[in-house]
Length: 291
Image (cartoon, rainbow, N blue to C red):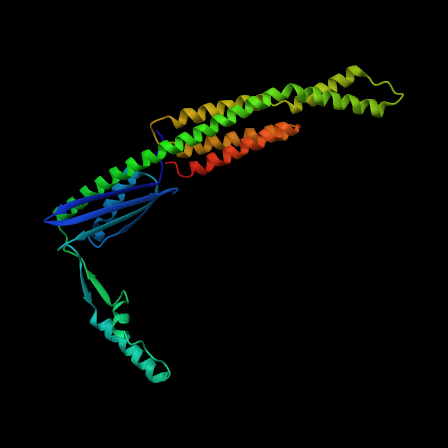
């Protein structure tokens, strides 16, 4: 079953009367790029939580936010030394540049500097950590559910476009007999124009014509393209995550479509080739977000 890399999950847990909220957002990415924002997670636990997320969500650009409401909210303290240092700098600038007029709300401006306001994190607590991990696990469940729902829509879209490509192959087959006859007719007319009173060797002409038409033959390309389309649909229905594999198959589909276009030698067939390319590009765009 196809899953999207786009997802959102939220979980709330209660620890000693305080509410802890975990939010996880995920968008497409080649690897597991995880960003964690929380004063509740100790540096020593950073690797553990990253391993949990990457093992369950596998890929994507993932943002994790963990915050608390209540007594667990980190205490914000003023770093007096840094505050006074910044204040002295402002005063010195005022002396050196008399026309400099510092803002009236200088106090609030200085307090807004991140280094001035320090956040004191709670002491390490094994029970709190277990509660956070439980909440992260619940939020991941929500992300995976979101991804599956999004994946159903993606699957429907790319499979519909794959079937359109198959239908365009049938359209090309309807035109092919006329293409061959048209090529023969053009060559014969050209030969008649050039020969004049010279009688050409028709046996040799037929041999050269067969050789020329073989170069224009697209039977093998159609067979391979049909096979790739069938393999694509089969892979999309498998249970495991197949985003990369589907991308490889789409590349092979593109090669066959390009070859058909280079051999077409027919305006209407070229139009159907353009239609196939258009659908394939839309498939590739969707594959960028498939897990």
